[in-house]
Amino acid sequence: MAARVLMPKGSDTMTEGKVLKWLKKQGDSVADGDALVEIETDKVNMEVEAMASGVLRKILVNEGAMVPVGELLAVIGKPDEDVSSLLASSAPSKASPAAPSPRKGPPVAAPATAEAPPPPPPKTPVGGRVLASPLARRMAKDAGVEISRLAGTGPGGRIIRRDVEGAGTAAPPRGVPRREPPLTGPEFRDEPLSTMRKVIAERLAQSLGPVPHFYLTIEVDMRRAKELRESANLLDPNQKLTYNDIILKAVAAALRKHPEVNASFMGASLRYHNRVHIGIAVAVEGGGLITPVIRDCDRKTLQQISAEAKELAARARVRKLKPEEYVGATFSVSNLGMMGIDEFSAVINPPEGAILAVGAVVEKPVAVDGRIEIGSRCRMTLSSDHRVVDGATGAAFLKSLRGILENPVYLAF
Image 1 (cartoon, one colour):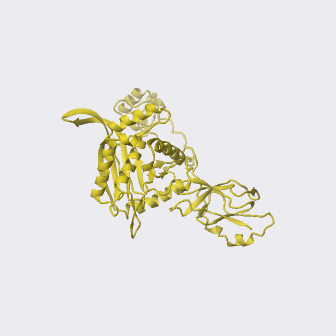
Image 2 (cartoon, rainbow, N blue to C red):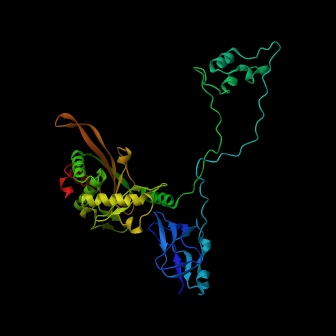
Image 3 (cartoon, rainbow, N blue to C red):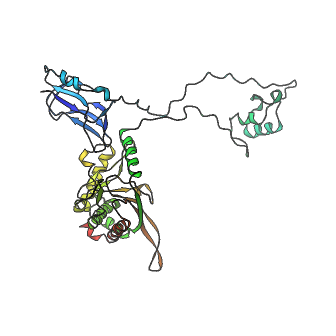
């Protein structure tokens, strides 16, 4: 019996996908589980597998086309099977052709206009003396420009200041600004939105508009967290812990103490999650953002969190995550400290109730028991949905988080 190949729904936010590359040709034999086509979703690039064995009888969508979720992509059947009924029920007209891909490399210059004729030679009066103003002569001498080779634009062909400035053959004299040559080529280039960037734009509008954000910022003494990191890395040099690993573990522990922050707004109800699944914001190649999820983060060791975070982030950057690896977070962490950002506010990813923005760990003078010392400090900002988290609730969560990070010994076990 003939089988349909449909555009899958890769995530809750996906409404359409792009056909990137057909991995089988029309007429090829396929087996159940074979990769048929690579598609681009709003989160990742993924392969669609055959759900039946037979022959790829018909490909209905060209590479580069945008196709709604659930739309027919192809038909698999026996070599002599009648598949006309399936083809008749398809609606390929809904698939929109891809926008032309932007040309790689530097922007293409605008078509050149006809070459302008060379300027007429300067008018030289009887006696061979070039007509030029005293200022133009001095500027030409300072700039190393042969004044007799310039065309004058002043009265009677007289060479004036702008003629010397426009020569552009040497550095301008001191106190005289250089006149830059005119720019050529297009003033801008337009690139079509990628599927991921389009969804990010829609999700941000859905978040910052309807979701009433409020922000709470703390500064954490990371001295003991730094000592923990250094000690752990001495014990196991092959698996380097990062500050982010320690922060993820601490956040999970704080969420376990404050389950009211580990919550989501569901419209008519608030959902309090019994498990702690933390999304980690990762920038992907080519632009965009995705949040792979470390599930049951509160039940994992630092070493397990470190290994999983590195592996997920590496595949996230090249858009190779599976759908189940980037959906279902109950809380998210966005860390820009490794890029030198001291402090920022992150946008909540609905329906999650909060997200933590983490800045860089920096050395700075701090007051300790009445004396000045050099301390390691990190600023963190909690963005909360006020429909889910109250100010006092968010403050209590941050207080617990700071206490854990400033006394993180038990996190190592």
